Image 1 (cartoon, helix red, strand yellow):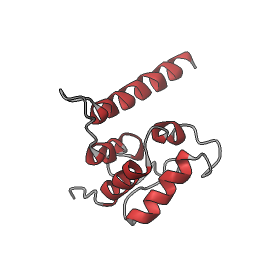
Image 2: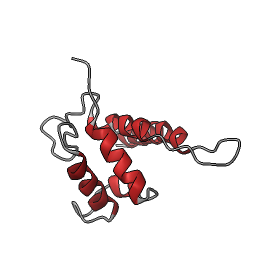
Image 3: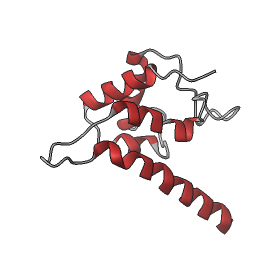
Length: 115
């Protein structure tokens, strides 16, 4: 049990670390926002093929959805209304404003994976 907890903790730290550079400060203190980098960071949990986690519905496929559907889902996760008690999505999305959520949704909808 302790080993599983340590693995989960390590995974979460690595996943969160991959998100940190996309909202960094430049020399003139203006924030850099890279929606494409954030969209690809989604693949850390949603599988490198973005097709979810197999038979486990808890981590769904994020490909082949239009921008508006993805945006609405991100807003619902951010507001903790879809589905209730989500373990991580509400926390990952809490700091983003509406414009940033729309940019992330658009970037996710444009992900094209090599075949």
